[in-house]
Length: 241
Image 1 (cartoon, rainbow, N blue to C red):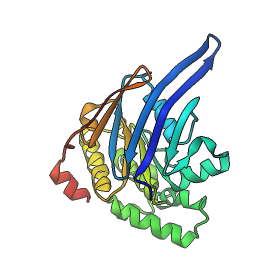
Image 2: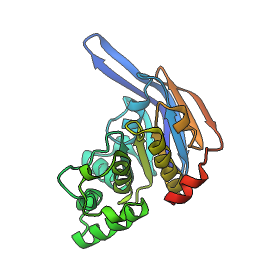
Image 3: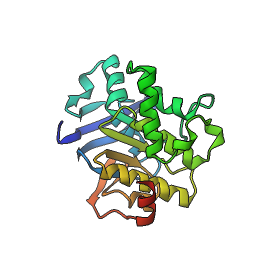
């Protein structure tokens, strides 16, 4: 297990357009220790989403180095990248991305299908995680039978099912009201306290304040990087943990 779960050096990302190349990321340096909780902020077009896609092995940099859990990502082929996405990373999205026609249990178990895990083990692991996020009584429910906040908890359980080294959360509270957002952030904080590394993209400073480190992008560069004591809502953290 490496100390740096993520290490980025001199990273650039350009996109080709009819008018020529557009530089989206410029000379980005970033490292993250195992167990860190990092919030990434910045205005639209600042490069934070592109950076997140590169960290998630969904896109490649134009140049520069990206090490993920000790692997040089740019040197890996598509099949290896897919394996790393499945086994090293867990993804949580703003829109939940649950399959509407299968149960919550099967939604959480889905990543294990691609790992070759038996059905019995898949369901057993999914059940444990749904119980962990407070939804053990909804194993056989469908996504449309639960609230948005509960759906995001299902998505978090799914992100955890392969025991990832790193969770990448892209605006995970963007579709939720303020109370539910606080509950979801309390859950992330509890997971981080258990040693899980988390990178979260958000537009909201109050959401970013739950992380122990805040990074801000502007015009494709990191312009702010500091550590702080995260906000803790003791009652919510206790309830979820």
